[in-house]
Length: 159
Ligand SMILES: Nc1ncnc2c1ncn2[C@@H]1O[C@H](COP(=O)(O)OP(=O)(O)O)[C@@H](O)[C@H]1O
Ligand SMILES: [Mg+2]
Image 1: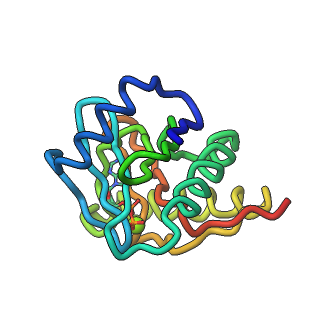
Image 2: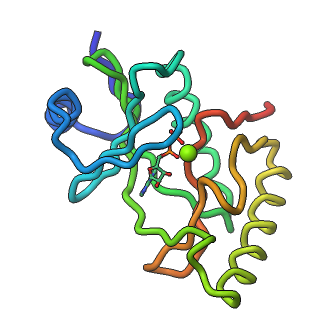
Image 3: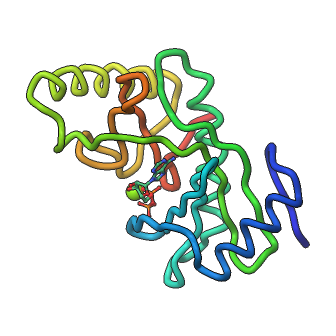
């Protein structure tokens, strides 16, 4: 059965599912997932070898929502988790980020401070980060100069 958790209309979900199926978007490859971009969204879906993709993307949806509520932590808006089409997928805000390794030395110091501060806040809220490091799964957003974290498939929340 087709199911949308979060805020996305069914017509848009249908269009995205079709675009994923036809493989017509510009893609970025992570370890287990592929992120495709259109004008408004970054759409994340599994590669064929990924185990338990529904569970991982649903976890990412929940963690993303929890992180968004923490003042001082910067993450993309996670709009929706969609399941029941050809592949499960997550619809999130597209961020234009500069990776840490591409920053100059002043920008690196600023990013390091932001990284440590955000990680501290996240820990204080009972959230355990997964494979995120200063070099991986984060970047400085060109729009506001803040360090943003993404990719929460393997993060955990202690309740
Ligand atoms: N919200 C986003 N905005 C812009 N680029 C993104 C966004 N989310 C992911 N990406 C890009 O897609 C790549 C893969 O996404 P990621 O969530 O890290 O997947 P994986 O779980 O496979 O590592 C990232 O390294 C990054 O370059
Ligand atoms: Mg990643």
